[in-house]
Length: 309
Figure (cartoon, rainbow, N blue to C red):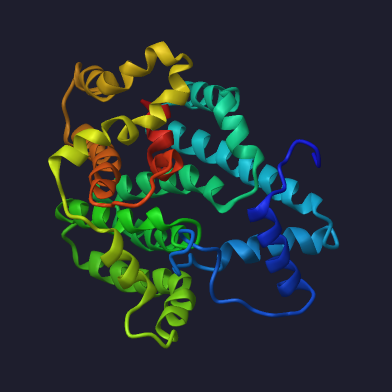
């Protein structure tokens, strides 16, 4: 394991954070930088997650590989659980087999970094949001917990409030929905308050987030949307297995909708298709307003949606 799991800058940073927590008992309220040189940080939950494994191994760096392995197992379970619930056991087995033996997926899982959680947590958010718009308001607090946790692993969490807002018209219109929303507020805040408080404590005229947004937001332009079309659907590439087939990603979603809706059209199926569209359109259009550097894993919130399709 110690030869197969890379141990670079991020892993060293995590190891020092774990040492500060385990040995020096220094609690931290911020996590890793959300974006290099931005002054913005994700929440601290991932540092505490890593600290547990360093505590188990008496600060042996092998903890990094163990944490990556545990995250990979969690991802395996999430793919199987959600695919089985939404489709069938057979589809779930095919999905986990494809993901398990895809080389890009193997390489992704080997590196211990918070972004390993992005595809799995995003898929869980997709599933519970889908359950909610089907009329199950009791899942709203779980959705809030998952979105709050996502703010502790990557800044692309900012897309989920937008997705949820666009799904609000389909939320159950019942009195109990208000009750579950009230429960969801502390469930969300418990994850984001530490880093939020840290941001407000900075003695500057402008917040780091506000300054970074002002610097990198260039407005919405259709030309930029078309430029990012390749990136917006890039998560399909790893499941097409051959670069010559990458063009299929541009027709994969329409073909899936035709097959999925061919025999019958129902509200349940249409809501599923609506969420699929949001999971691709929101980050794609969102990054079209961003002038900074964009990496392919920024779009990994829809990786397992591409896998299921």
